[in-house]
Length: 112
Image 1 (cartoon, rainbow, N blue to C red):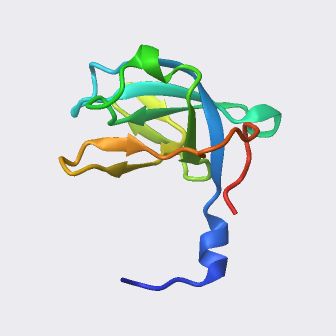
Image 2: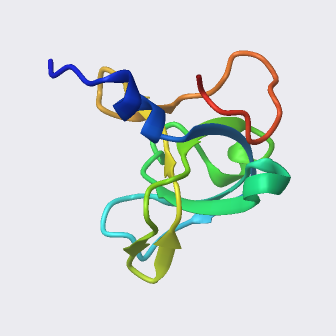
Image 3: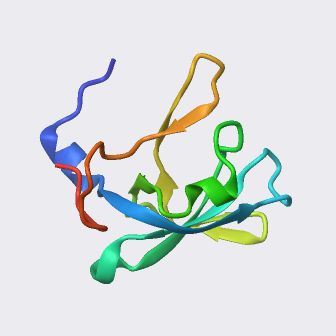
């Protein structure tokens, strides 16, 4: 495992937000969902293409809190511009389980 300096970690802006909208992304090369996440007034609503279809349906995500990296550059995924990287962990079958705070925190709260 490579070590990093605390200054490197501090450059990664990981925030909590609430999913406000989710829909299928049939144009994606690998199964994915389009997800919109509200990070509060300072950051606003950002969107992401997320490969989370094994455990999550669009209707189950709305209102759910997630964690995402908000300071990566936007990335074009087919016809969709992904602005954030929603975070998760692979389960034993490599399906992604979303990372989220275990308590209510304000939208836009930064991981410290």
